[in-house]
Every structure is written in C-alpha cells, then in structure tokens.
Image (tube, rainbow, N blue to C red; front, side):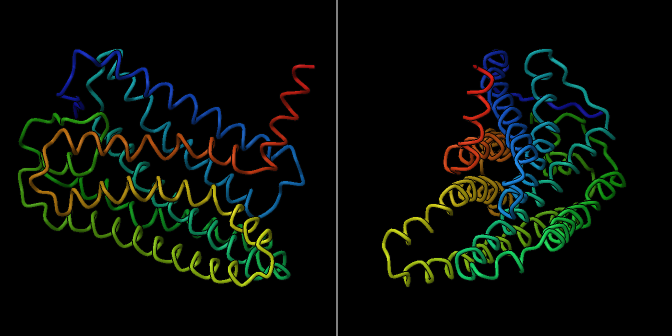
Length: 301
C-alpha cells in the first residue's frame, strides 16, 4: 500500500476541500456542456470545435483521475491507496497532460490554417485529417508515459510508503525507492520537457505566422476579428504552460525548493487548467455562447 497525505494544514483539510470540489464541479459541468452543445449542433462540427471536444474529454479524464481521490483524503481521511491504483493514477496524469498539450498544438494549427489560408481550411483540415491528428496525440501520450508505472513497479521500496502529497505524484513516489533512481527521474523529466517544449515552440511559431498575416490585413476591423478568434485559445494555453512549466522546472532545477511549494505547484498544475478552459471558451467563443444561451432560454420557457 502507498499512503498519500498532505502533511501541512491537516486541520484545515475540510475547508481546503471546498474550493477543490467547486473547481471540479465547474470543470465537469463546463466540459460536459461543451461536449453536449457541439454534439447537438451540426453547425459546430468544425475543426476548432472538434479539437475543443477532444480537449474537454482530456480535461474530464485528468480532473476525474485526481479530484475525487483528493476529496476522499480531505473529507474522509482516506490516506491509503493501493500501489497499482497509485501507478494507474500516475499514468493517467502524465499521459493525459501530454495529450492536452498536443491538443493545444492541434488547435493552434487550426487557427493558423483558418487565418493564413482561409480558402483551403476545409480541404486541409478534413474530418479524416482531424481524426488522424487526434489519434497521433493520444498514441504519443500513451507511448511516452507508459514506461512510468513499469519503471516504478520494478524499483525496490525500503522506506516508508508515505508521501506528502494529495495524489500519486511521480517525483514524490520515486524518492521512496532505496536505490539510485537518477535514470528514471531523468527519463520522466526529459519526456515532459521534450514534449512540453516542442509543443510550446510549435504553438509560438504558429502564432507568429498568425500575427504576421493579421497585421498584413488591410482592415483594422478584420485584424481585430481574426485576433478575437484566437483570444480564448491563447488564454488557456498561458494557464496550462505556466503551471506545467513551473512544476517541471522546480523539480529539475529547484533542489532546495521547500516541500510545501512542490505540493502547492503540483496541485495547481493539475487543478487549474481544467477549471478555466470551459469558462473561457464559453465566454469568448460566440457560437458556443449563443447555443448555450439558446438552450437555457428553451429550458426556462
């Protein structure tokens, strides 16, 4: 058995769980709403909204694999989790985080094609190509992070199996091993760094081309409209990469960072991105906002 316990502020666990539960409810309701609206409205079966649905599914899996277990810890005092369940949770966290990064890149490519090559958008990003891109993102996330639970399963553990964390965080678990885990740690941080940095660079390149095309438009109104379609995407990308990147760098270079800082960053890295995504897209995306308001008006009537 592996015990997961937040060692700090245990007397406030009940109160800490309330905002976590609120964030989880908002994430679930928001992402399910996006999936339902896009599925019901055929006019929304466009590349941007199809990629948004993939992102919503990823957020649902990512938050559901962590939040309910956290709430059991905070509210029920359930500190124990089976080792295999811990490894499964770790696999879902790492693989679906990589998938989320991949879907952000796919959405950036969609925005690039839509703004820089609008006449070819429907021929370049067909449903077949969208499906292939989605499959590649999923396979990449599974392939690169499947070794994590296998590597940890083979390590000998001779210390206490108790970690100061609210979920099975890779770096916290690997430190419990009673042998040199440098290679395992380097593999995990290396994969996360490579995938995250490559996706971030390609997203930045896509938006550099987008900005070049937008500033060349003759009409200022057309320029603002083109940038407006990218606003929600940029917001969620900044939230995701700022939290994920900070978590990776503190583990890689912050050897003297206090444990409670790692715990806080680790929680924010998993909890924050799925929470604002549906809110931002529902508010900033006109078509989704209109369809949601239409449904609410029908329900009220």
